[in-house]
Image 1 (cartoon, one colour):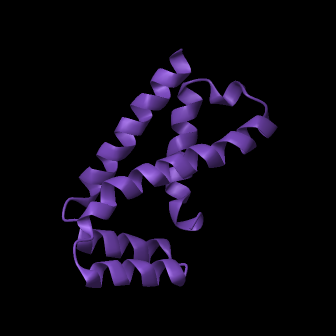
Image 2: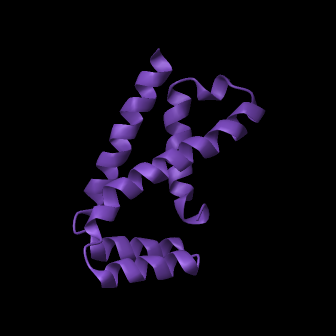
Length: 106
C-alpha cells in the first residue's frame, strides 16, 4: 500500500522538515518516516472508514486491499464512497500536522 500513499510520504516529509526533521541523520529519518506515514494512514483510515456504510462498499474495500490496488483505483473508490473526500482527508491530515508541530515544539 506504500505506493498509493507516496503523496502522503511527501506531505509528511515536508511537514516534518518544517519542524527540524531534516536535521536528523539520514539513518534516523529513514527509521522514523515510516512510523509517521503509518500513523497518518491510520488517521486517514479512522476518518474515512465511517463512510463505508454498506456491505457493498465494505466488500469493494476488501477487494481493493486484497489485490493491492493502484493509487488511481483507491482514489476512485474514496471519491465514490465519500462525497467530500478531499475535505475529510485534508482535515484529518491538518489535525495530524498540528499534533506533529506541537510534539516537535516541546
